[in-house]
Image (tube, rainbow over all chains, first blue to last red; front, side, top):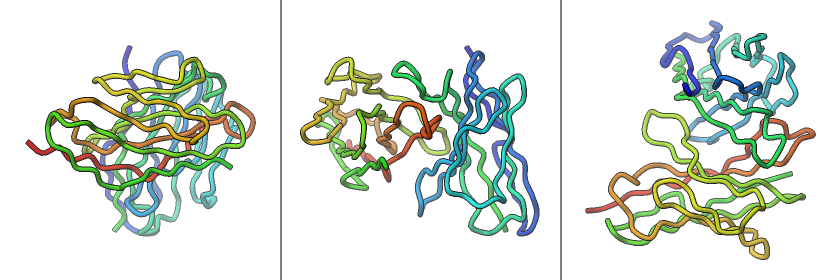
Length: 116
Length: 116
């Protein structure tokens, strides 16, 4: 089975621009979660989507948004980029969003976003 | 609220020596606990998870972890370190369902260095 894929792997943007990152989950997984990883704050949860609905959201400003399509692929968007948005953005998929003891999240390789 | 504390941001061992990475958690309900490993410029790879079936959990690459409820700990061990074990290790906790859908709460990570 193919793993979680994320595109693009690297992005360079300037302050004020917006960016869209894409994530394709493992086949059959309906839940997609997004995380931001920075040296200072570590790994922080952004949001989770399941069957095209956002079920959970972390403590991030409204500039961070996402969506999920009917094939479970997900995108996240960051508008009005700030220098502090430079990070590794990780996508993880699971069958049901950690809803049971057998559920596990599997991570993609990440998208490295640099904001200049 | 759940939280995870990893004691020691850096651990250094010699090849062939015991690896011990410490993780303590706090959770208001019985948690699911995970250990992930991250190699440079890669995503997170699942090493093992605890879901209450057994307190001693065996994972990939010879790693294992023991859940100790009385100590609220879930330390990761490997009897004999290999050079290829050098990476960053993350302990994470999840709670089933409700407002916790798809959310892992991570510790700050421990960088493991293995000396020849």
